[in-house]
Length: 287
Image (cartoon, rainbow, N blue to C red):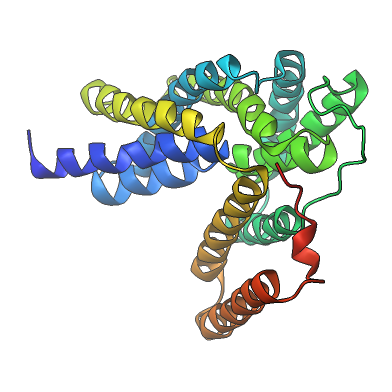
């Protein structure tokens, strides 16, 4: 077993941890690992990622379901609507400039992260574990699927905020339910890729096994992490990944200003959270 393969497997555990704890980040972590560490062709990496993320998400659902953190009706309907929306988004995105789509994706991730960090108030007496209304689930699922189809990624990063912020589910339940949606969309995308891409099944199954181990551990941790901490962690993670994509796609002259601006915002937000009692970031819902 080569050292490179061992490194790929070790990094793959992080894929599962991300999905298990945050309900997102699988594709964003898997594709770079497969391309830059394993040396796969981008299309093969994307197809492999869909298999890894699909199986890992499905495995992660088990831990969350045992903890009562999965809304099955909401997840299945959201997934079906998301698949339909993603198909339409893919048709539209196929005629749009790639750089424009990635810039839109990065800005969307930054906006999403700020919304997650700010949080939303849960009305007193609100029922936290109720299934969402049918129309709301289908509408939110179709919109998220449309955006996902346009940018070609970001399933979990959009599903979790949609369920937590728009749908009003507790963060831990949104994470568990999002895994159902991610699994459905991943397998649907994989079916399309397998018509033209061949997978290295030895590498694919090895990475998947390592990611599943991380997902099981992440699923157990998610049930023990306070709601506010989980929400903040998700928000900061999305912000970092959004800025990374933004820096990659922005003109060279804009890279330094972008990094400095984000660094100042991060420092200000951290200071606000820790030292200012009236900081708006303290509106994050507590567990």
